[in-house]
Length: 97
Image (tube, rainbow, N blue to C red):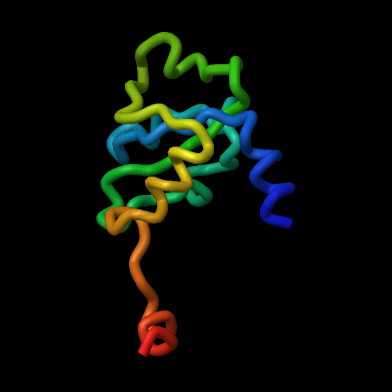
């Protein structure tokens, strides 16, 4: 199942965007459907959007929104595993004991 999901998302480009630009996103051009479906970092200062490779959203092309980072799928997964984007759950801490 993971392999299928990984292959499905390998044709996507990911961008980290400042929360200040959330209202500038045209959700018809990205994989997320609304401001409520974006992945936020833990301090809620940044979010992630994705689009098909080669179909960069016009709001990025024209400079209206400037990504903080542009990533591949594997780079994005790696970033999501960092302390700025994920925190260890109490249940996980109990299992490790």
